[in-house]
Image (cartoon, rainbow, N blue to C red; front, side, top):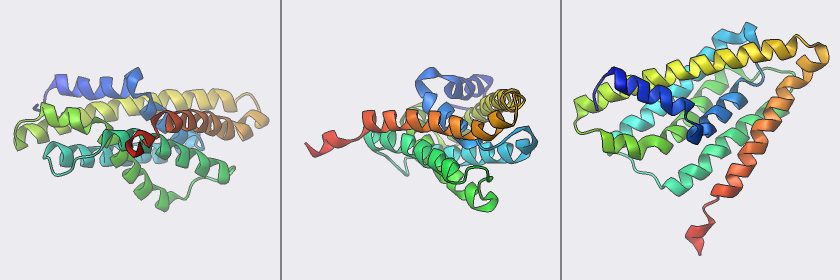
Length: 195
C-alpha cells in the first residue's frame, strides 16, 4: 500500500461508508455544540481526530500494537456516548477548548483501531505503510471536512428557525448521537468472552 490516488479514495470512502457510520455519529456528537462561527475550532477538532486515527493505524500497520476487535467495537460507541454526555452536561457552554483536543486525539486512536487490522493486511513495508497511511488519512480528512461542512450548513439552517431551535439544537443532536451510541454499546458489549 503506497501513496496513491486509490488510497486517498479508500480513506474518503471509508469515512463515507455506511458500515462505518459510527465515525459519522462521532462527528455529529463532536460538532453538536458548535455553529458556523466556530468552523476553525471544528476543523482543528476533526484534524485532532484524524491525528489519533493515524497514530493507531501506523502502530498497527507496523505490528507494534494489536487489539481485540470485540473490545474496539465496544469502545467506539463509548467514545460517542462520552462526547454526547459531555455536550449535555455543558449545555449552552462550549466544550473546554484546550482540554478537549487530547481527548479527541485519544478517541481518534480508538476509532483508528477499528480499521487497523485491514490496514495491516494492506501494508508490506515501512515505506509502503507511510505512503499508504498518508494517502489514506488525506482521504479521511477530505471526507470529514466535507461532512462537517454539510453539518454546519444544516446547523445554520436549524439555528435560523429561531432562538428556541438554536437553544435546543445541540441537545437534540447530542441525544440522537447518544441514543445510537447506547444501541451500539448494547449490541457490541463483549460479554461473550466471559461465557
